[in-house]
Length: 221
Length: 257
Ligand SMILES: Nc1ncnc2c1ncn2[C@@H]1O[C@H](COP(=O)(O)OP(=O)(O)OP(=O)(O)O)[C@@H](O)[C@H]1O
Ligand SMILES: [Mg+2]
Image 1 (spheres, rainbow over the protein chains, first blue to last red):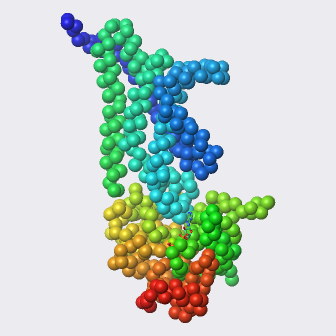
Image 2 (spheres, rainbow over the protein chains, first blue to last red):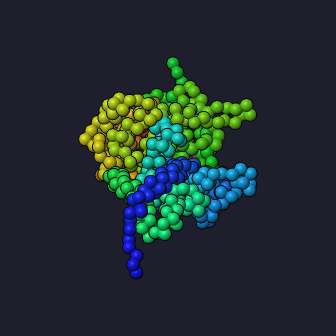
Image 3 (cartoon, each protein chain N blue to C red):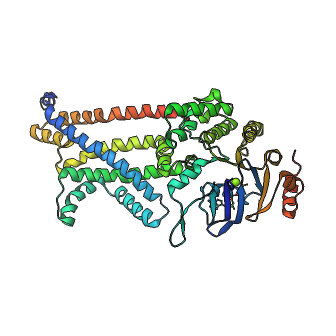
């Protein structure tokens, strides 16, 4: 019991962790942007009256929701060489898996949100001459996003945490860098505490702002 | 000089197997005010919604100011390009039974929305127009209120201002007062009467037969998917010729003229 806690090696190696933070952000932000955009369009397919469009999108959504993310990450890395003979870099494979996974989850959020908006809203928008796209952008989406915001925030947090799984593909993100340091120095306690703290510092400001935004949007209630 | 403002020929509308409108021919001249009455489920809303293509026609044509809506393909099928429908809807203002204000926008933003997004006016111009239209419906002091804070009557007046802001050539009202508390009906009907005094062309679906009598230049009784009886308010509401019309009016009991 003579283990002395020593955080100095965390501060000494901050540059290693910082590099990890950069890569984590490079995974996280694009995965969110691509995933939400993709999710919106998949939701449109899910809502289509044509089974040819709605059925495949349902399969897509369920495949991603009902399998472990870890397998999805690894699968993208190995599937491409096996299926079409080109190797994706670990980073691209991880980003793809995260973005597609996010698109599947957010598609369900968008779909629920859009169907919960009364159809009178779309009609009122069209009645003043708006196109489908204008009505979506100006009338439906703002209301959907307001309703989705708590679930959306959860998803954004989830993706940040999920991105740590990319370490199994040796993507040099924060988790990987942390594991590298702890393997090098045998100081997992200090290093993983620091890594957890950094994740918290990355995620918390976002949830804080989302909470403020929620309040702001609630003023029209 | 020109023909009718709005002309409908051979209009049919079915929902799956349910044949709701069974061949309607009809035209509206500039400045005419048409009241449409009929039993519940007779297709009054459907008819109105076909006019601005909220519903797709099963058969028939609609001509607005001499221009036939839709494009006929080489094989005879009619398609309705979105651009054209947007244009038609801009010219036919619609007011809904449930108001359908945009809840995430203030009263002023609701009225400005079409001007900015559809007519592409500057915010300043749109603001000026919106303020003017809101004053017209007596809501000058409610600019910054959220729709959720307004009474039903106020919401419906905002909805009317929103429709008016687009300067429509025809106004379509689908039972504008039937989801209002009785004491709020008057304020909305007053606004509609003011619009009538301005000589606007309007179509009004209503159960307020007393109001229809004073408001309309023409009354239509819709039954069995056709215009069963058409005439002046006196002809249709006071001296109906068709047995069905008589029976409908009798069921409504006395109404105050
Ligand atoms: N989108 C729809 N899908 C299927 N059936 C519909 C649809 N809209 C209307 N109908 C049917 O068409 C018929 C006419 O409906 P509509 O709403 O036009 O009647 P209405 O005269 O306006 O009745 P009310 O006085 O109750 O408003 C009804 O039987 C209704 O059930
Ligand atoms: Mg109706």
